[in-house]
Structures are given as structure tokens and as C-alpha cells.
Image (tube, rainbow, N blue to C red; front, side, top):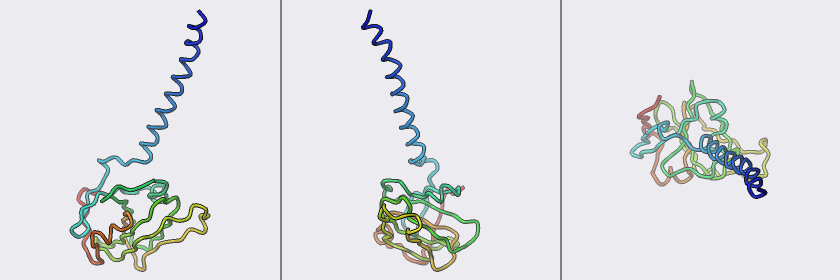
Length: 163
């Protein structure tokens, strides 16, 4: 009878732990992995790329921060309601990036190999990245993407399934 009571007592604890683990896994998936149906198919010159769009102010502030990596030939798109000198920071970044600055569907400027900051820097000490001209969108990609794909200023940027 004592063995049955021990199992009876342990079962709810095991179920609670399993439920917590499942919840953490689900939450991680929802927060950090884009849904493939939400990805935008794009071309920069002759280079195909899949883009996740940061639509809300919160998504734009977080950007790619706190992610461990970015898949090859993928990036994050930031669109603005009107052209401006956009300012970005590398808060929470764990890998270096290239920035592709765009206006009216043309690459207008490139910033390459922007290093991830040292983790001990306070937010006020983080370097800021901005183009020298007004832009209406920006694409962040893995560092080296621009050089590897020979992306140049003046190339056309096409978004195939942009909503």
C-alpha cells in the first residue's frame, strides 16, 4: 500500500514538470522562430533571400537581438512609413551583421561587417548605425552576405509576397 501512495504522490509532480517543459518549448518556438508562411520572398539584384519583417515597434526595437544565429540567405526587413535617416543599435546581438539600406526599391547604401557588441556594454554605450541618406527600408543579413553575393549600391530590390 505504501508503494501505491508514493506513486500517487509523485505522479502530479511529474505531470507538472512535463507541462512546464512543454510550455517553455512552445514559448521559445513562438518567440524566436518565424513562421515560414510569414517570410517574404525577395531579390536583391540576382540574389534570392527570405525575409522576416519586423512590423511592430517592439519587433523593430528587438530586431535580431537575443538570437543565436540567422540562417543563410535569410534576413530581417524593417519598413518605415516615410523616408528617414534610420538609426539602429546592436542591443542583444550575438553575431555580426551587414545592413542593406533601401529607398524606392533600390540599394542606396551598404554597411558591412558590423560587429556584435561586447556584452558588458550598457545600452547608452552601444554604437549606433545609420545611413548617410534617407531610407524607407532596411534589410539586416549575416555579415559577409553583401560581399559574398556582390550586392552593390543601385541594385533593384524586389519583394514578391509583401503584405
